[in-house]
Image 1 (spheres, rainbow, N blue to C red):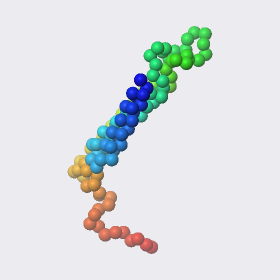
Image 2 (image 1 turned 90 degrees about the vertical axis):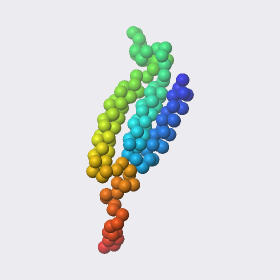
Image 3 (image 1 turned 60 degrees about the horizontal axis):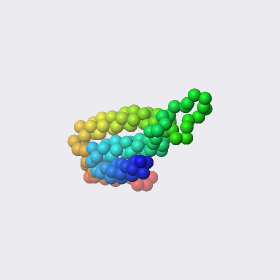
Image 4 (image 1 turned 30 degrees about the vertical axis):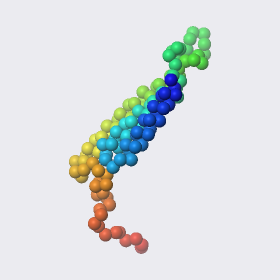
Length: 125
């Protein structure tokens, strides 16, 4: 089961990198969303996938059973979901404002900071 999830993490990372290398902001945002889901799945897979023993310490014991799933990655994933959603919402609003101000979502046409027709600044002092 963990091998399937590992392959799925690799597919998520490959798709995310492919989308983030695009020129269009919407594709970059989708790549970031897929990358955050891939990282969450990676953390989930690292926490041992086990359905036999719940992550509860039995009475009379000090530690979890060796077969139990690790609850720490599950707690980290819950936190990461909230953080990635807020980060995605911020990037979505930022890209929408850039689209409103510049009239395009193509990063090659968003060159306000580096205009093409302007002379170069002085190179030496």
